Length: 368
Image (cartoon, rainbow, N blue to C red):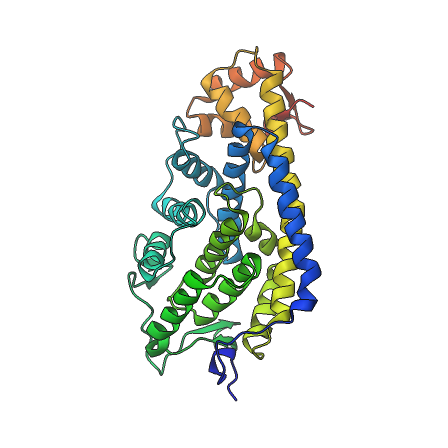
């Protein structure tokens, strides 16, 4: 008997106990329907804003799970432009941001298209536009080709004290493994759409077909399948944001499942519970969107210049850190004197107010 699930004789004949999952499946289905119904009532513009916010969050949090921190402004600007929601932003996203946005939007906006090896190669190339991951070269357009004496392993710990959490199938097996996975993904109509998202995530990340980026691509595949389950390209909840909150539990259940048997009921339960919590947390995104809409409705007669509109939107989207004059000047691409005049004007209009700290460290927040 092998140490890892992919080494078992009956791999990949996954099984799960349907009776243990049915109540969770029903609850998730109810929450999905309730959320989609609620979003139908708020109008196209707000739905588009909610989708923008959700996909931006999903991309940022999927990266954070792997320890990669992307610039939130760049991600939002790139997503907005590709969705046709913002063509005036002065922010120019880097190649790394453009690549991951391209992958995520292909997954969620074209969810009905088949998942093929060339599509996966394109996603992988988008994640690594320079052909490197850190200091390591990355081969795109192909599965990993590590040699038998250098297996693909997931490890932690310092040099000489590493702990091996998982070892993936040998590179020579990947063409057959991926062909089997893709055939199942594109033809299976019997598995519940939501359970299929859970299984696809686990199956792909267990094969681990690339040198790097497997986790992010696995989550993109799950998002693609969840879009199919919802029957919509508009996204109103973020699975990756919830996984980020539960990252330790995520890695623990993955390791336990990959070292267990073919009954993956515990993984399915964890995925469904995580999805349930993601759906419940969607209220936070909707509340932020509604707050933004209410703000602009309240100030529809107020005159703002382009810099002020830019910075107010950043505050409404959740500004990272404290907004001070120098940050305003840098982001709005103006002098500090101009930034101070912009801020003073908003203070006089009771749109902004000073934060608690004074002096040179004075920060500004939306008047409440």
